[in-house]
Length: 203
Image 1 (cartoon, rainbow, N blue to C red):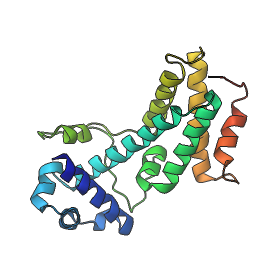
Image 2 (cartoon, one colour; image 1 turned 60 degrees about the horizontal axis):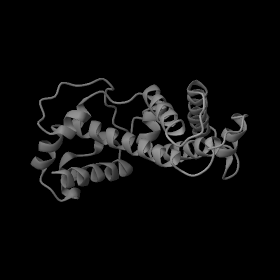
Image 3 (tube, rainbow, N blue to C red; image 1 turned 90 degrees about the vertical axis):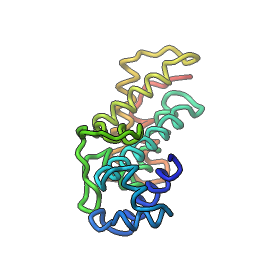
Image 4 (cartoon, rainbow, N blue to C red; image 1 turned 120 degrees about the vertical axis):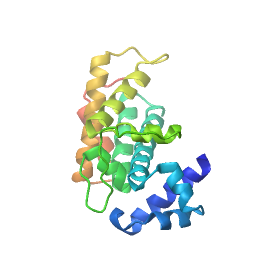
């Protein structure tokens, strides 16, 4: 039941904003989502399963935002700057995105293992959540690979794939440095990325 699953994940995320994960109770998450506790256990199996699915959803949401930024109008530097801005803002505003991007999990957060866990779930979404969760390096690599695919795809100006990969990885790593030490000004992240990518590219 996809609607119940999303409601439960929303409720878990809202509960996490109010209290440490260790203090989040499954019965409260279920009540907040308007479903039974049994429905919660049917969907996720355990609190660990709920945590893994929540982390997976937030990581997927971050990558969806990356794809939107890469699809924006502008040249390659503008699109990579937009990707960097999205990365920095998502990490600032979403504690789970920040954790999966940086690898720093505070004691307030769930701390699911990144490796896959045994699963006998018949729910496809849960089997996916039980698979390996992305590490920071995995996410940086995913952003890099998406950027190369979009920026060198049909209709794009021909660009060297290795150069695109380097520029894309530089953009996301600069964005992550700005999470720890925010630059001044509203456009600080974008300006930093544009300045670092010296050779102008047109698309």
